[in-house]
Length: 342
Image 1 (cartoon, rainbow, N blue to C red):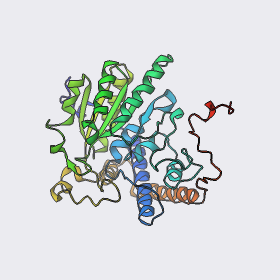
Image 2 (cartoon, rainbow, N blue to C red):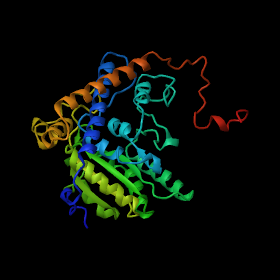
Image 3 (tube, helix red, strand yellow):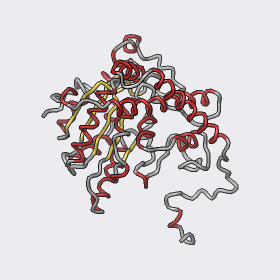
Image 4 (tube, helix red, strand yellow):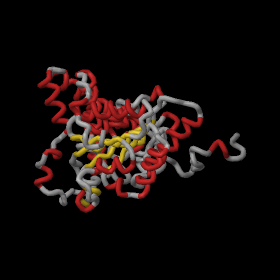
């Protein structure tokens, strides 16, 4: 089957309970990022803030269907708040990292988005575009060397990242090694402010899949049903030993590249187009129309998400930040290797 032949209707129907659970993660991510954006504008977050508004359906659909208990790995990027939490990242970890708490996974060090717990299958995010593909490749090969099996690695990238050498080399290696890798490319139509027609000449990024010798899927990234069913298929195929899977989601970033950017370069016609839809609003409407949940249930779910966000942010704000007079600043990953620390 070629990259362009795969159609969502060939997949199994989505389960309503799974759909509602995905919506819960999507809404929680949006509520949290709205709060972080507000804190950034108030001067309470150090560093940049890059939100995943509009990409929640695509990110959550991958993160929630990877299985930590089976040794799966999730290499997330800056717009994957939803996928991170659906995979298993605690909300308090996110809040602590943005607010610089020493109790967070990075102990208040490094940038506010470079968080992770590698030993739990969550490598820390790398800012350099495309670089996470090879990192996850290495983790998968390491598992293979240790005799593990039936694991899958998920890694995310934007359309701009696919133009980098790191992405090309990583995906090429994954294909040659037949790694159980799912690469999720959020084609949000702009690499910062560069539109896709100045990034690549092919009709669709999924057309590149055949060149790497991997299976490709092109979907509407604003449609939660398509995202869930396609990632379910891609993960199952990778776990069955059928090699890397490339999933391209067409969508639009519903904010600037970062909170410092007003996205004035995005034409009104693009905002008004199909991929300018808000995936959360689309998912909510489908839940109600299919009868998978009531308005009352969704309202309570949303209120609980807001409460969780406020509690986590409040807790993180009350915790200590790094103290240079007391912290020895050893690299956390190698501290135990330093002479005298054995």
